[in-house]
Structure formats: structure tokens, C-alpha cells
Length: 245
Image (cartoon, rainbow, N blue to C red; front, side):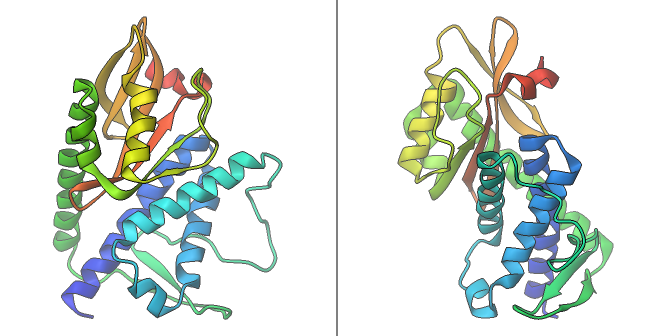
């Protein structure tokens, strides 16, 4: 396998934890989170090689797909997140392995992660450092109320997803595009009277916490690809905000 191929595979493995964090953040359930990740990877490997090759930023694609699955489950609370035994995709990838799947066929043997451990560790640290830099740019723009700086840090096809559980009602579906995301983030995080917006740790990474009278009323985290924010995840449901109080 080429160095580029190994790096691509390492990136895919890193995204598993990222996707788990997204699903856990939205649902707080290990079972549901595992289902979201499993379904996200199933849809990825259901693509043919040409379709996958056409995806310039796999991280952004995986993030958007996981977000869509979360919204599907939120829209239909009676859906059983555990498909149980029987036909269907196998379990999600174990740490250090990625499943291979032939569309319409059986699951192929898993492939071990190539390359020395030090290379993987260094690659992971670089990704975390990159996320930190971009997240801080996003947070600083929000804190300053600088909508132009906010729009500039967003990818052109960025999305914003919220659980819609706050006083400010939002659509129960993703909002796409840098301009539209800027408007939603401004409405939910910036144009809020008598509130304090501060950087904070959200699932172990830099995010934003909006507080009113000392109580968290919104928490935001971002997904990053390159030097841009590809997705903004906003929690408004008071029951999910207990841990930040």
C-alpha cells in the first residue's frame, strides 16, 4: 500500500471515534451511537470505488452522513436503533481495523491498519492540532460577533445540525451552505440577550458553551476538514445540557 493510501486508511479509522462522539452527543446512548456509526460506514462501503474516489474530503462526507442518520432517528423516535440478528451489515470497525464490503455481496476480511504506531500517533496529533486551530477561529468569530469572520471559516458546503430543543425553534433537518449556516449560528449563539459565550471543552475538543445566569443554554462543537469548519453541531435540549451546568 502506498504512503498516501496508508494515510487515507488511518484517517478513516480516526473518524470512527469522531462519529461516535457525534452520535453520543446527540443521543447519549452507546447502542444508538454504535448503530449510527455502523450505518454510516455501511453507506460508505456501499459506494463503488469510483463514487468513493470522487469524494474529495471523506471526513466531511462521513460527518454529513452521520448527521443525516441522527436526524432520521430523531424524526422517528419509534425506530429501533438495534437491528438485531438477521440480514444486514455486521458490526462497526474495531479499533485498528476497517471492514471491507463488496456492494451487494458478503463482507470481506478486515484489513489491519498499516504503518508503524509512531506514524499513526503523529498523524492523530496533527489532526487534533488542526482541529484546535480551526475551532478556535470559529469560536473567536462567534465571541466577537463577527459574522464575516464566521462565514470565512466555514466551508462552502458546511452544514449546521441542532436538536431543536431550545426556546429558539430551528428546522429539524440540516441547514446547508456557508451563508445559511452563518445565519443559523448567529441566531442561536450570537444574537442572544443576557448570555455569555465562552470556549469550553466539548467531548474533549474545543467548542462553545452559551450560558444565561450561569446555566448552559447551548453547546456547540465543530467538525473540521483542512482549514475549514464543515459542520456545526448545536445542542439546545436542556436535559442534554446538565453536564455543562
